[in-house]
Image (tube, rainbow, N blue to C red):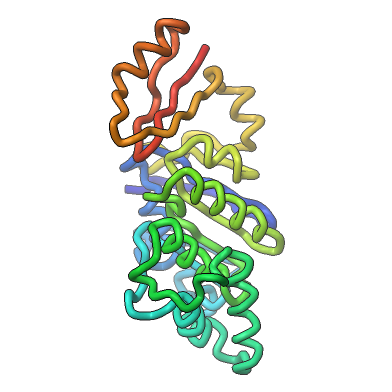
Length: 254
């Protein structure tokens, strides 16, 4: 699933792993987090080898997986307290409560702190998963498709949370949305068939490989994609539909 992949990630930067479904993004994330072992090669995190120092590495790592790992009968605050005791066991009770309060406010969850996770919207659940990853001052934060299944408004709110928290951290996220990678990233790594195709800043990649403007539309339930495409092409015959994923359509305009 991943072939001869070699990448560097930098503190204070957000690096996006961009690619279609099956490109190797989630497998790469699973290897970075230690869920899957490497068949060859290794990963170094702040000088520590993941093959021999995984326990040390995990103490400085926060992870938000593609699917939420939450307990329906715990509140948002209880989730952060639970994971806080695991991630930073050396903290006093008062310090942990202050850290949880700060994280809830930073992620816009403070007013929902007493709500059960099972009653939260999809966007709020993703924010909670990201809050858990950020908790405890994680130096390495890995986010596997952090905006999966959320509405466009929640998506942009999540982008803001991620951007505000990159200082002093190395953030790695996977996505198949080009606009998400462009907005958030200092560097974008394109993956295909488990290999690295190219890597660089959004500006460099657009200048080198750009194929025109992108028009992103939010779909309603009754949206007729064929009719929308026909309307756009009646004005711009060379325009074409690039993505039809979730609640959005993305067109490339010449």
